[in-house]
View (spheres, rainbow, N blue to C red):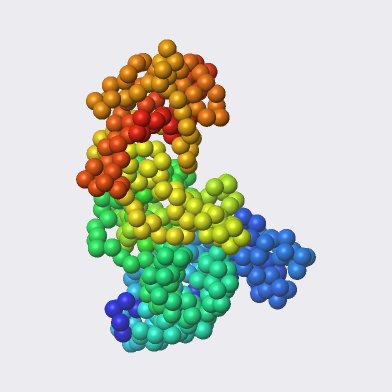
Length: 508
């Protein structure tokens, strides 16, 4: 058995089971107007996961709709997790309620093999009067898929085992749609594509999916081994005996954790949440994170686990009562590759934004949708580069500085793609010139920009010289910039080059 083997246990339709409904009842658990789980009776009527609620109701008018309560699901699932830790394996992680993962190497040796481990895991869940299936593979993704089939994937066989599956199992609707347009319908076909080409065309998320399709973990671990500097703690003085304040603190701690990880440029694959009790005990639970859990999702999971511990009497098992410290510790840190955030409110997820961008690119061309990348430079236009959406920024230039002559704040609101012809004159109506020693021939009194009329100068600042690549005749450039405020309320960023004035930008 390989060092990285993973066992996954799966309880089918667990969100439905957590609602406490009858097995024969047609039930759908929904979140944000989409079905996240449904009962067997609902599936028989044509209801499916990820289906919009109105479509599900049209297929099954008698469908009972239940809004998802993640904290309640965690509270229902926690006794199962504790039972597994006590009878099958000492340490596991919760991917989501109803789905757990754990290293298979140690437990499989104890139970006599991977098949025996899977059988024991299923038997332990069955002891809690719940259905279960288990799978073993080299990666978490493949093992979770194998659990749905109740299979063990051979060592090193993740890629060929995944190959016949449709690309939709990767869980990325935008990528799936694009691949199908390209004639790529199976995971094996996708895995056969060159890795560098996938990265260049589909970005970091596509590259992660390509690693998954190739039988590798989606996020390669970084060399950084310690995450203590990213750990967030919240102390209670005196010890807190009510769960609501602790759940509220978990949300604040999760916010702080995400800010710290973002500032460090990393994401965590797993998150350990723990509480230190007044009697000296420490209780912990590990959740699968992979950079996908928002602060609220973390808080809901913590709240559900705390409620389960309280219902079981675990929190009050010792002498003194109360929680003295809450700890969130990220594990398995890797570099953050970045994601497009939601632009139109919480109802529009990043996946929807990416899908919309891909459709626009398909209709108008690859350059039609771009993202902004900040780089080095002295002028406002030089510091911003527009990269086609989905492409890798291969020419990233960070503003390492110093940049002599860089434009000071405030920065302009509008930067023109092509400079506008401008004139700067003194009181006598003569053009204002700039000497090689940066001396103005006269104070500017009037400014005129093509298409915007002429106005008196109310104030000015500069000039700021820019001498770039003087050692190379072709790209060498010698200019100077000035900020000019007109009496008409307009303000301009002017550039003088070869004795001629131009308007580079406008201040709003």
